Length: 359
Image (cartoon, rainbow, N blue to C red; front, side, top):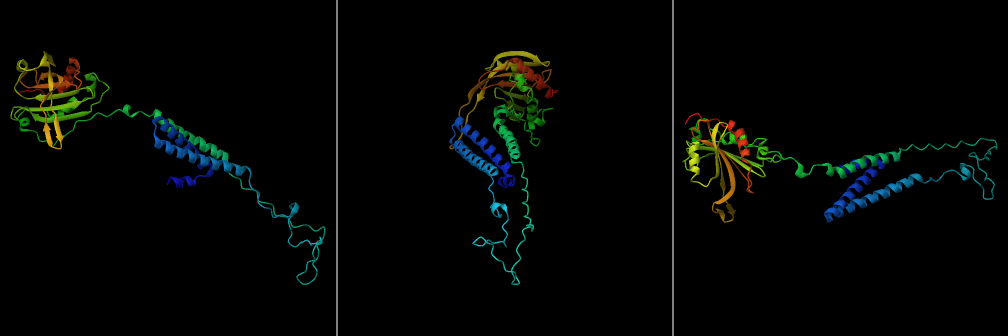
């Protein structure tokens, strides 16, 4: 299709176009071959340059033909006079006698008789301005070549393209466990994910340039409760930090929770209030579980200690009737944000969780 379109163009437009494109692409490929040491690019660039050289030779030859046109052989006689077919010269120089069609001698032409007028040559057709076409084509496609050459320098790199944040998956047809049916006004995992996956979450963590890379949510039940305690959870992951939020609908108050921490491995325990609700800050290690999905079947290693996480647990209501919301942050490098970041996140997420009204 492209070759057909090129054949439709006039000679003085098509040839400069091929020269410009061939030279631009050839030089660009040779530059890439030298810069990146790519042999294939060098071979293709050489083909383009050879093709361009051939087109330049064709154009130069056409220009020479236009400057020195070949003269067609003249049908006139010597001196530019037309050779009359009836006037033949005898070998001795005398005109040969001509026989009249009726047998009598032909009347010789009188000296004063006017010669037959010679038809004037037709004026040559006016050709198009070849130089104007060539210059216009070179200018037009020179601009195109400059755009192809310099375009990558003005285009954003792949690393500069802003990635769109991931969204929370919504499964409205998921059947909730029975524990959610017996819990007044429980929040679901999808609702927690939407409350946590805020546009300003990275800024609250102290990494404003990052975008969420992963999100997940589930409608689980608390461990060791035989599926009787609803515990929805959600998680949003960034390059630096991972944030996990859960809501546990048990009967444990914040004071009882703090007392249980004394028997665990929690560190840096600090009680406070968030939005008028009892809360506690503490640090604890996450769990690391490795699962091997090799050819011999799935197998898992022992549960290991993961990176340290900072957690803020806040009561589900102001009167601390039982139940709490936990917001945990950790990173694979072991770095942790400040406690104020956890407090800021809690102030944004907690209003999305209905307060517990009954015990």
